[in-house]
Length: 287
Image (cartoon, rainbow, N blue to C red; front, side):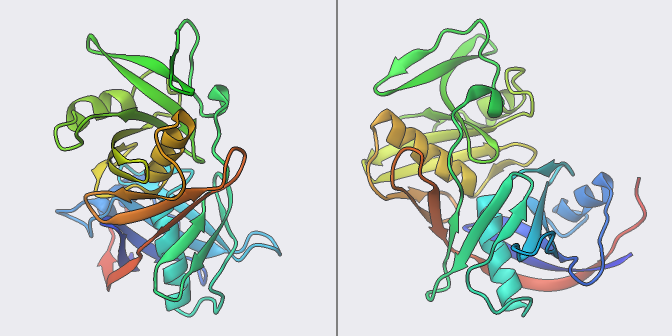
């Protein structure tokens, strides 16, 4: 199969984007893993599939596949690349579009300076909806919100649990450079308390409007930036009372700006979206 693709990135979180608006594209998990492979394929954290509108009031459908071939609910950096892609490739003249994802509707908007703002929706704190199994656990009140204990090989990490359309466990650390991201990240991702696995965020608070962040992403490992992870970290910081107003999130890949007007309000994320190159790949038939 000859497959055309576009390589993009949002603050270093990189994607292979596929256009399925003219003809359907159906790939096996093994083919998706090959596309994402940095040695034998194109290389990416996620594969983004652009599909036609599923309803009259929606512009496109947006599907996200992690590097392990599994489909996931949401990807904020991918959403920014998605709107830049459909606008740049002439699939729409709109700068603000309505997009159907696995977790619901989002409305990314291309700004005049080339950055993209995405309405990421309202955070979910109801634990069964994250989903997170808290049965038998005792939380602790940390400032204004609860944290939950995760036992990891004898150590205990205290995390704030929420969903931004996908599950997140955020912990505060004193220094992200020395945080045990590669040691604890995989253990948190696969912790049995999270039925659909989880993204593990490690947040260092610089001041009330500036944090540094590393995220071990479900199905991808540590990435240079994670849009929903940035949103989840800021929401957790706001809810605990550690942060206020609009917050800049410094990741290894670049800067994201997160804002939320208050409880029950949607989270907005602004950041870059960049084209890298176009290409084609010959994909073998893989089960």
